[in-house]
Image 1: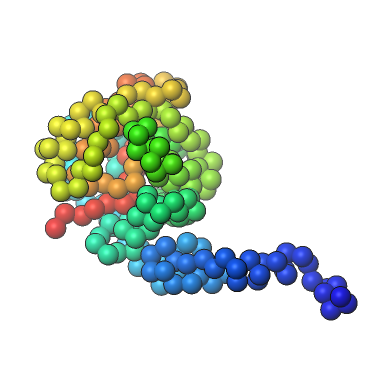
Image 2: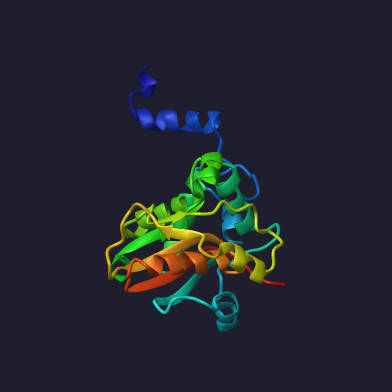
Length: 235
C-alpha cells in the first residue's frame, strides 16, 4: 500500500500493541499513556520519599553488627498509599516490571553508584514461599537498581532457613525472636572485604533486615548498608 511506504514497521505495530494490550497504573488502575511507565504521572507524584530520622534508626535497629554503617529508606508505605499499592502489585500480582521500575527509582533517589558498592544482596524468600510466588520481589527490585547503576547483583548470597507465616500484627520483640537464625550464607559467595548493599522490600520493625545483616556479616564484608524499598512508619 503506497500510503504505508513512509512508515516504519515499529510505528505501525506500537499503536496496535497499545490498543490490544493496554497498560494500567499499578496504583490506581488508570490507563497509562505511552509516555508513562508502571505508574501514572499523578501516582508517581504521590510517592513519598522516606525522610531519615535518627529515632527511626534507633528504634528499629538495636542489635546490628558493627559492620553495618547506614540505613537507606525508599518510600513511605502507608495504608491505601501509592507505595503500598505498588509493592503489593509486585509481591502478589506478578508485576516484575514494577519491581524493576521501583529499583530504578531507588537508585535515583539515593544516587546509588557503582563506585560506592561492590554488590547488591536481596533478602531471600524461603523456597516454599518462592515456589508459591514464583520470584523473590526483593531480588527483582535489586535487579532494577543493578540495571540503573551497574552494581553487581548477587542473588543467592543468603538463604532462608525458616519458613515464616505472615508477621503482620506481631510486636517487634515477637518478630525479633522468630527471626533469630532465620538466615545463613547462601550458595553465591560474596568476596571478603566487600561493600554490600543489603535490600528488603518493606521495613516494618527491622527484624528481618537485622537477622539478614547478622548472617551477611559472616561473609567478612567490609561494610553493609541496609536499604528498604519502602518504610512502614509507626503511628
